[in-house]
Structure formats: structure tokens, C-alpha cells
Image 1 (cartoon, rainbow, N blue to C red):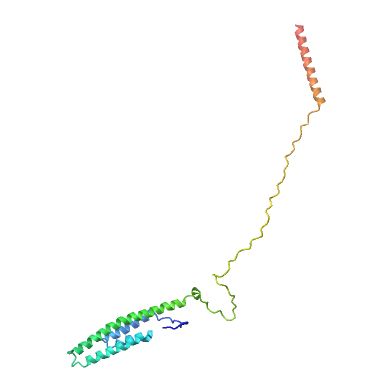
Image 2 (tube, one colour; image 1 turned 180 degrees about the vertical axis):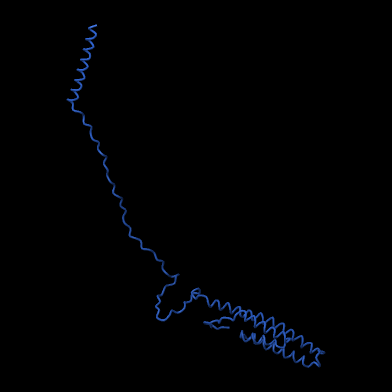
Amino acid sequence: MQGHGYGQPVKQPPHTAWLVFLRVLFVALGFLSIGFLAWTMMLRLAVVTRRSLDWGLFVAVLAADILSITLLAVEPGDEIHTSGGWFGLLLLLCTLVATIAYYLAADTRHFLLRQQAYQAQQRPAAAYGYPGPAASYGATTVPVPPAAHRAPTVPPTPPATPHTPPPVAHTTAPQLPLATPPPAPARIDQVRAELDELSDYLRRQDGHEGGR
């Protein structure tokens, strides 16, 4: 458990293939020894997690293995004849099964949490509001206010100018030229000439009718 303050940086966990190999190795070691080496799994788990609970379970498994070996060792011959021998064998097998189940579950959970903590540590510090990495030596940085407290920039508005209507062009209608009447004397002369021709024509008509 970490105390208050900043915790130590989490180291990158080993590769998954290596962890699987170690689990298979220690489980096979306990299984092939018929439980006599089951304590090795708890020893590795306690060294990795460094928890008081795992150290206590390591001592308990080691004590159970020693008791089972002692009960089996007092049996005469190679076969089990007493209840103490059967109890030692049953204790040995139960300890082996329980140790394998707990070791696999605890070891997998430990490295899974460690992997998650390492990934969270590798995320950009800006996502959590922490300052970013220190700038290189000699580089100058300009402090920038946070986005939440930064005043919005508003473009300056031009001063209002009084609205003046556009000048109206006064157009005057074009003046038509006045018709100039013909001079009066020329008109009178023309009428007089027409009357003379008409009177001559009437005289000729009268002369023709009188000759008949």
C-alpha cells in the first residue's frame, strides 16, 4: 500500500508469454512433486506482490507440507496403514489444489492491475490536468492561461456613423423644340394662288357650257 503523496512510478510488467511460462513451471513443479513443493508457488507470489497476506499463506502452506511429509514418513513400509497417514495424504492433496487455484488467480490479478496502472501512467499528463514534461534547457516558455479562464476574443466593432441618405439627382425633363409656324405672308399667298386657280377653272367651265 502506498502512503499519501506521490506514488512511485510503476514499472512495465514482464511480457505475457514470460508470465505464462512461469505460471506453468511452478504449477507443474508442485503437481509433479505430488504437493511436496507446493510452497514454491506461494513463495514466488509473496516475493512478487510483497503483501502480508501472501507471506502468511506461504508460511501456512509450508507448514502444511511439512506436517503431511511427517505423517507420511512415520508410516511403516511403502503403503499407508494408519489414519495419520491417510490424513497426511489428504492434507497434502488439498493443500496442492488450493495453492494452485489461489496462485493462478492472485498472480493473474496482480499483473493485470499492474498493467493497467502502467498504461494509465503512460497517458498524456495533460488529460488529467497535470503539467506536461519539463522543457529542454534554454527553452523559454510563455505562460498560457487555462482555456476555462481565458477571456474570449471579440473583434473590435467600428464606431457607428450617422446614416445619411444618398443624394438624389434632380433630373429635368428634356424640353421639346417648339414648332415654328410658317410665316403668315407665304401661307396667304399660297391660298390666294389656289383661289385664283379655282376661279379660272370655274370660268372655263362656264365658257364651255355657254358655247353649247
